[in-house]
Image (tube, rainbow over all chains, first blue to last red; front, top):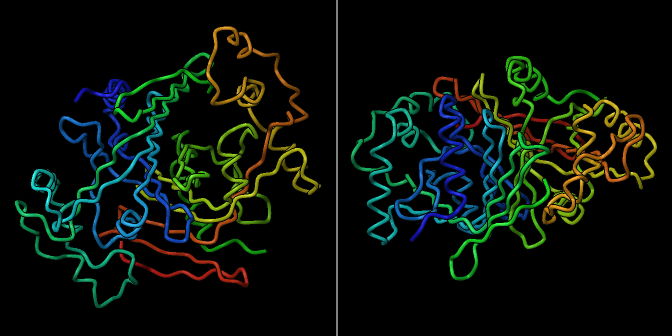
Length: 195
Length: 195
């Protein structure tokens, strides 16, 4: 498949903001079981090879994993401070856990785990996220380092398959904004819209 | 009323990140009419006096205004780069337009307009946001400056009344996370939870 037309804008933004580690942080909105939105920061882990899907990671024990199983639609909001531009990417999420039978994606899950820092891997060996923190459990936050080759069972790969991308440049005169939409044949169209 | 217990943590984060203009930018997630989430960057405009409500502004013509009328629940995600901490604030939004009869809030709407920069006010005189951009309309992006004393009719005040705040400090050892919840009597409780 071919790169979507908004990919070059993302690549340029990543390059021009590479001095800021947090330019790879973005906010992922999902919908809770009660219909209310949820929103949290996640780290962009690159695109899935030969696709336009964004890669993230998460813990199967997290609330977001439960939300995604029930309601896979999401919108990420990605603001780049140096270039003052925003991408809003709406699409459908796939949660890939150890149990999934898609062999090709299981290999991606394994290499994503292997590419993590030791500190990032260690978090998956911590106690259950979101549960009350107890004094007794304090030692559990200093577990032995997990195997760097083999992901822990609770480690999930999270893929966002975009269907719409809204790109806003605040630095334009006045500003510039484009809306990219995917059609049923997986083709992309774009339109310049008012900021 | 008294300040909620999470207010001091927000005040400290704002102070310690004051060198970054974008530390006042945060991401607002809402739910669209089709049940999918939406997410965009907004600018924090302070707290409504004597309340714990966060102030934002928006254009009544924006998609977000339509979404909020149908579905007022929201979650903002606020990441502070200098201190590496995140606040997730879940609550209910109120959209205050010119037509609203709440005299006290109409005065807040007016002073919020007056406190804006000229450039920020000018955006409310631009063509309809999100509509296709046309060559013919180009001049419409250089309108005469609106009256700095009297808000344009499409200018709205947006208030977020929090019911839950999730505060995560990435710099802790290992990390620190607190969950603040509002009860039916408008009191706040807090609990330390696992990151």
